[in-house]
Length: 305
Image (tube, rainbow, N blue to C red; front, side, top):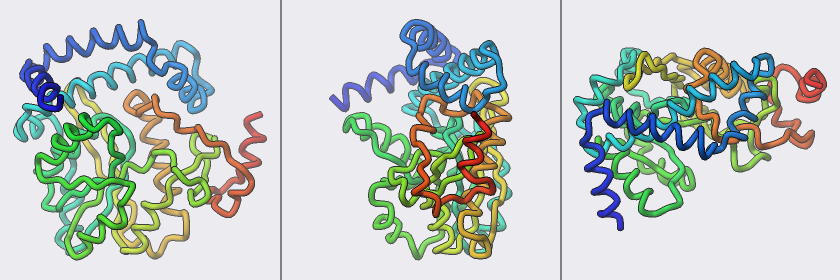
């Protein structure tokens, strides 16, 4: 089954991008207009994030988001045959930000969000930096698709480790110089160890692992955002959040990340993955010791009533 599906995707990937984008446009009509895939989740999230926007404005963001979502799927299929040269023409970055960090001999963390197209981005980054790239990810439940995606993601030499056994896996690289990529805007699995802060004026849980890992290793942290100048082309912007996380108060790095991600999303809302349930967890006063925001959760909730 694996080789059959892989072969079909490989043949499809040989089509020119203009043809593949025609497939994406057709898929948009089916997925968004006909099936309405996760529309309730998407519009629920958009209404939380942008209560000031009209229905028409939210609809416009949603339409652009679904186009980007399906383009991302098609672009991932293209990876079955795309060369590094192909990716190098289509993905750019201000990678010079990383050079002084590498020359210092330090490893570093890069924190980013679910902004398109992270699959192309991590592969293109291989040619843009001397760092060994390690990415923490959640494995796909379906074994066939997990095997295919793992093969695609690691084809350029990048290392992917499961979030389920991150500590054990990272121990293997403690004496190497690496860039650790962390998609840090996912909902945490454990709310009792999560940090809580306002995100789009809503009390929101953030995974605490990225900050705690950076402090434990005293690793410089870089934030990354991705924009789409035109269809099929992406530009990643790196900015140094801190070169010495040990001087930051507990929760401060996560708070900086939350502010960074909110600004990134507001600037290009159609680029974020609105189909995941970012606000599925409700704040409970029992988490008050993990509250890192400047305002209290209670006052924020009261202000929104």
